[in-house]
Image (cartoon, rainbow, N blue to C red; front, side, top):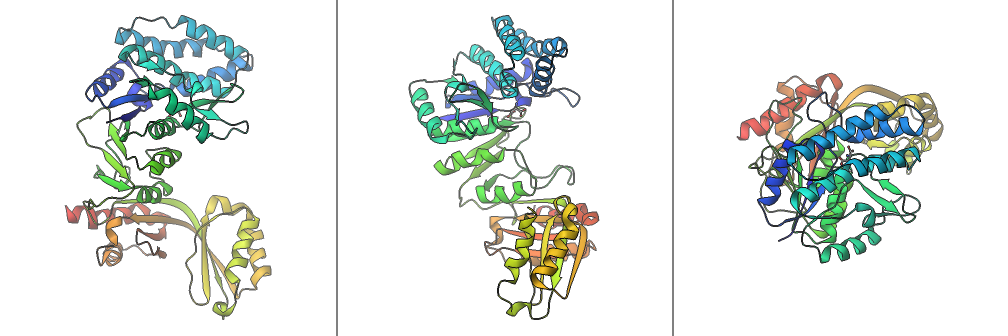
Length: 439
Ligand code: ASP
């Protein structure tokens, strides 16, 4: 059994957290390949080391004073090294970092030092082999991730190494310059390593006990999702429910490796298991609810629209011309509605309306702003009758007017449009009818 374990910034923010991580790794022999993030926040007011590194680099490369921030960063690592009782000096590493900052080694180089140093410390603490991600994770000259080259190098290197630490978030281009993934990218590194070694499991350790059925800012202590499929996750993540970097899914999904989201502060919790398919029934009819505010709808009406071939294409072409992507497009016999992000649309509003008039000569065009979309997602909906009925009667009881309904034929989700002002109440009503009532 081989596991790749990735630890997020809050799991490695201090010596105290590092010790918890050490215990977790030692508790399971299969946890052979470890991907650390940089030290994150220890409390709400704290800084992430990655942010401090960006600030420090900007100051140093622009000739402003940077020593104070650099000392602060060094202090974060010293607390960890001292607290763990690891016998090592950080001086040489910080001297070369300072020199490279002054020589303008790049912002990506700067940010990457956060995970690099955490990796070096962790390797010394656990007695694992340290592998610099720059030697095994590659980007091409245009800055795109080189999946093939990386997979080959990484699998060859790790084949003969029993236990290794590979820092997250960065790699190198062919010319040797350091490049990072986008923020939160250590999740991606973990997934790439899991694929390369054909891991049985990719454990992603963070500070929550998995994906929650609904947003905890709206629902007090929502239930944790035990098992979720990649497809369901995609639907929820699209609507803003995020624990995992989006790009972390593809490498492991291709290989059929499950991801287990776990909580470093509560290792006894099982967390959420993300899988391709499962015969495990979800605990409730629905798997999760997520949503977003800030949409608007453009409703286009024209008599005999149904007979006009190409009507929809012409309308959508106008949106495309202005670079606006559409979210949903429910339609009637003589009407079609296009839902878009209000912030993307506002700037071009009048031009788009004029464009639609020119393209299809509608009878009239009407707009409505301040709409929210809610996705009710669940593989369990396919097998049970009356899900839609329950959702809409719950919304009716809560006196919420439904503006739009969209259910794809996959029966994996139902999307509901409501006014922004009804957003929270709608989520509460749906949560109650499925989770509270089915408990
Ligand atoms: N340390 C990086 C960040 O703050 C990457 C990561 O934590 O995954 O974005």
